[in-house]
Length: 336
Image 1 (cartoon, rainbow, N blue to C red):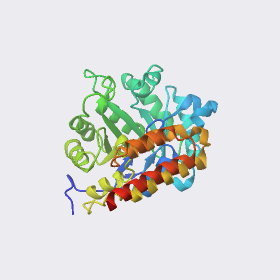
Image 2 (image 1 turned 30 degrees about the vertical axis):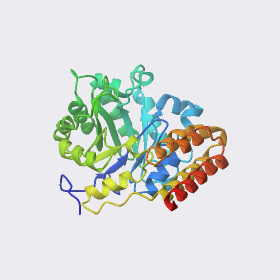
Image 3 (image 1 turned 90 degrees about the horizontal axis):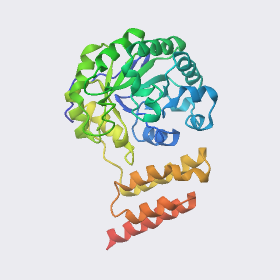
Image 4 (image 1 turned 135 degrees about the horizontal axis):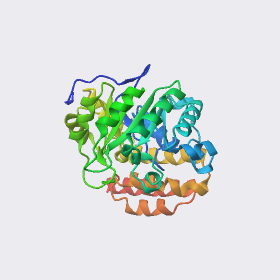
């Protein structure tokens, strides 16, 4: 058995009890369906889609619609995250997300990217509490599925208003919150302040999940202890280690923590990830998978040559050949 920093209770959102309290965080260009599938196979619970821009979603812009390619009921439970600045656009995007098969709609008020905040979207909305209320209210009223909200601590060090935003959201019907432990001006610099998330936990009665810098079971334990959050969102820490969510979930439930897969199994996971990707996308888009393949290599021994081969591979065959060559090298080293 493992030590958990608090008495574990599964999170319930609306009528749905989550498989466990560790959620795959939404990441632009990362949490497409193939990655979500791999994470779920290796112990993931609730997964969240890439952020979908509401105005582009409604206009059927190709690049945004590609993010929802392959979304089906077999992904349940799935949350689709939407972003925008206009309440009615956000409401309509939420309705479309529900029609696409989402069990939850997540509102993005945490993205720090300039292309988002310059349109008064993402974390920029934390500067306008009236706009937060209008957007949340419109989205909640538009759908029959639960609505959740993801924010940061605030815009900057002088405006850390996450507890106020959280209370507004709760009053308007949001049923779960996720807080990234940085301000917008921090972007991804410095360290996530999990202790400040505790102020939001204390301000509301709905579940709150902590996010930011959770990269292994140890950091997950610390984040839970400092934030008093009921759950965790794991983002980039899961890249290259899709089993991490399951390991953290074991810790939270006080269960023995599952072992990481063997080297041979990890290579099989990489092969499957390539295959799942190419079920949805043509080989000409294989370059978009390289960030995942590189992340797997981060946790493989003597993998620089493998990484180099995968970064120039432009077909499934070449990926499989690179993996087979590496597999043979590792077998020879072990036999030596």
